[in-house]
Each structure stands twice: as C-alpha cells, then as structure tokens.
Image (cartoon, rainbow, N blue to C red; front, side):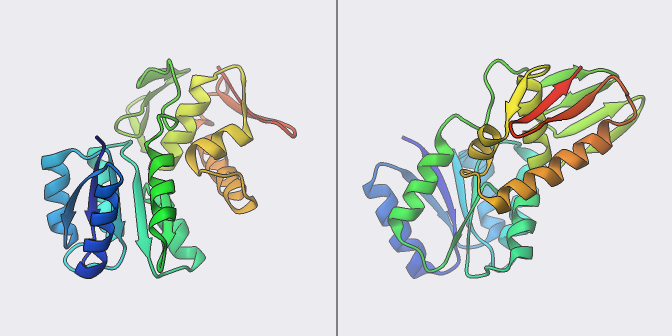
Length: 224
C-alpha cells in the first residue's frame, strides 16, 4: 500500500483529500504545515508527497527544497491556487514532479499520483554514481565532481542527466524523457527540457570528450 504524505493547512480540504485517497487504497499521513510535514517525511519515508504551496511556517517550495537535499527521487506534487508561469517553473526547479491547480477534482489528483508512482523516473540498469569522462556524477546527491570542483545540480537537471547516462552513446528520444519526467510532451515542457540540456552542456564543457549532441527531430545522445 503506497504511503502519501499530504501537507495541507486548509483542514477541510485535507480531510476530503485524505478520505478519498484512503478509500482508493492509499495510506495517507497528514501535516498541517511544512515544518510538521518535514518531520513526518523523515519518520514515515512516504512513497509520494502532495504539498500545498502557500502554508505557514514552511511553505511548499521551501519544503520541497529541503526534501530534495535529503531524498533525490521521491515524487512531489504541488497543490496551488497560483498559476503563473514563474511559479510553475520555480516549483519544477526546486524538484517538483507535478502541479495540480486548485480547485481540482479528486480523480485528477489520483491519476497524477498513480502516474508518479510508476517506476519510470529511474532508468533501468543505471548506476547511481558513475564516471562521465573527467567527471563523477553522484545522482543521489545531485552533484557533478571534477578535479576538486563540485557543481550542485537541480533535481530536474540530475534526472535528465541520469536518463542520458542510462542510454549513453545511444539516442534518448525526446518524447521518452518528457513523458517520464513531465508526464507529457507539450511545447512548454519541451522548452523546459531544452533549458536543462543547455545547462548540462555548460556544466560538462570542461571535458571535450563528453558531449550531449542533438539528433535532429528525435532527441539527444550523451557521447562518452
């Protein structure tokens, strides 16, 4: 039975969400603010986190930032009434897996939870600490090391590089990585992927033997 950590300060909404998720086979633990949510995360080690963005003591973005320091891969779904593009981008930058805008239907939330609980975010047969030319890629801690220098990656940057490494010297289809990490291959998500690829190229540019090349109309290839 998957465990969901629900961090929501609006208690009436939290009760409705918890009751509906439990009726559909999930175990739900609830926290009314981000500080309690962080403590419950450490205690319960949930399979997925659903967190409101605007909360007292520790908001959803700050909570996600702290969770990513402690766990690289647990899915985080934000609940928010804020729909501005800048907020959405910030949420993904901090390691969010998905956004659900209020008001929402329970069916929509359940579908998004189920999609994030599928074992698709972790490419098969890919070690967690690997060599990329002169670099060492530490996926669990989201870091690139080279000659005493450490580049801290965002959660999404680390995920994209992890997928590229899993198919190193082969083509990683653009659609595949978009579906795995964003859940769809819309234009907006595609542009976000382009930004992450550009950043990864910049991080890796000190070693000319390591390249991320475009395969026009298909995807990308990590050349080692």
